[in-house]
Image 1 (spheres, rainbow, N blue to C red):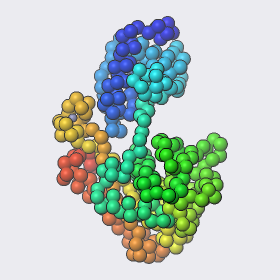
Image 2: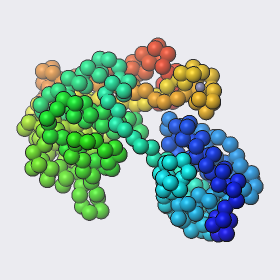
Image 3: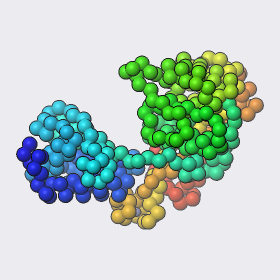
Image 4: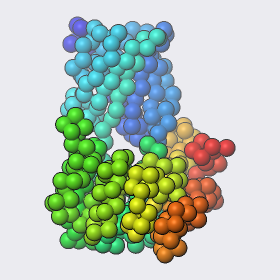
Length: 359
Ligand SMILES: [Zn+2]
């Protein structure tokens, strides 16, 4: 306790240095794992945990104590998980930090999540390939229907949704409501709401009430139950533009899943505008082109680019959906083709393609 309350100047400096390094590297998280020799430090960069360095001896434990003290955790407890926050001024690097500790067999593990002031990008900043960008803009210009994004966690769906909302704001005078879990960026002009499972405010409940608020556009975090699916499809048919996400492995898989949740092929077929499936590949570091340098923390990569498979809905696709012929739905570009084109443009490499899409 005394070391934490009256920290040694080198401990304070060590933490500030570590956090400013993490910030300038663009890390989302800092991992500190206690090991018998000290503490192993890693940064999560572009979604991947990278080993940074090892701290030895007493000072490494003092560092963990300092973090726990700033996060208002019990500094003497290391056998139970604890969660807290370091405020923006306390962090010394002008960043709010969420702290989570966990006891492991080699000692305490501490994970720091760095909150960045996220500003929603505009569509052009997503680095979508031009045909997909045009298709998405075209669908967003429609007065009603369903636009659905799929992809695993961390594939950029939320960022795409925010960019879509910003684009819609730019089109002007449409009442836009979002139902999010959680709200990650504030968008002026959008009526943003957040679900709360503990208070019983699920996507379905929120959607039912918000449809009465007369929205023209509804960005719905996720469709994961029958009630939400049925309401979204109906809303898409009655003058609302719905943007949402749905869990599936491919764009035809989204349609299949939607039909499972809402078994009305005619309504589903008529409501769909666009379905996309995306992943993020790490971008080759512009400074070193993959060799590894200080700018990319020796990883060879900096930032990420999306690869996208998409399926637009015209008469042929609608007929296929009405007839339950999912096999007839052919996406416009596959994830593999999109990745190959990014490699050909020198934006990423084959190692990234294999990491994300498999060998
Ligand atoms: Zn580099």
